[in-house]
Length: 196
Image (cartoon, rainbow, N blue to C red; front, side):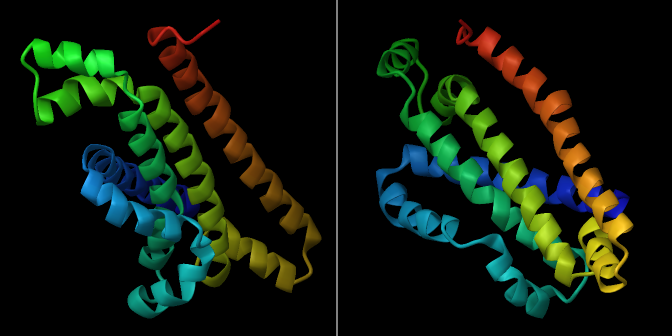
């Protein structure tokens, strides 16, 4: 379990960083959106497990290959949500910020990104979900972790262990949802005045 949690932590963090950077680029640049944006949409439609043979060839059967799969699983969802968040910032906010002297990167960091936090939260939630699934799929063919233990238990016809691991996977998902994302969502919705 700790091996899986370590992998998802690294992969999820990288997916957030890369996805945010790409999302800002696509949201800000029409040229990047029309070129790289199309590539992101194409890559988003490829299940992350499909990349596993390439990851195993490139990185071997260690944690790096599995983290690579997690990053691919989560990055595109984060990218598209940040992109939409940036594009949907109210023009009035941008005009007001420009009137106050904000421009360039200052406009992005102090106005656009804060205004797109609700979309970023949705992206992070999706990145976690896709990354967690990618982790389980990647560990089936990799080494160590809950996914590999699940496969070994199946091979040994140990159904008790199979069910126990499925319960552990579900519980971890519930813990992350209710102890991390639900409180964060409540704070964000309250802060941005989106609660009813």
